[in-house]
Image (cartoon, rainbow, N blue to C red; front, top):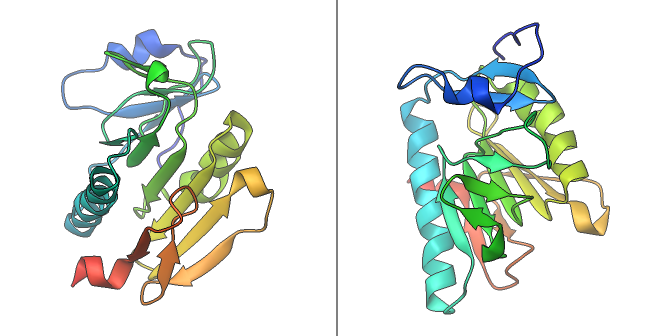
Length: 181
């Protein structure tokens, strides 16, 4: 995980970053983001495609948005995140600047530098913000940890070879190994 910068910042700082430099802001603390690797991007693309295809086939109205896409979880300028995948069903939350409020479903694909952020900091942040479902897809451990926050249930860990039912779409099932094949 990148080291956080020590001072308190606002979203103005994020928008002042040089072209191509990415960071997230959580409670006024800036976390630099490392560039993703090939497996990360492959998973990101295939997961987005699988979810979007399902929504389209059902003529659903939810939006599937990959990073970089701004999510403003709080009604202040101290928190700005870019989840790997955000599924937003309430289109009134969407503006040209990003999403104001919690997406319904978030997926983070773990990178070596983001492990602590994804498993701890962001898990707590997303739970408190009202995200309904959160997946942590971990290529190095070949497992996916699934949180159903609205059920207040313990997380469930799936191996990449297992098929996972998406909680917000009862009839959508995803097998990570098949996506990587």
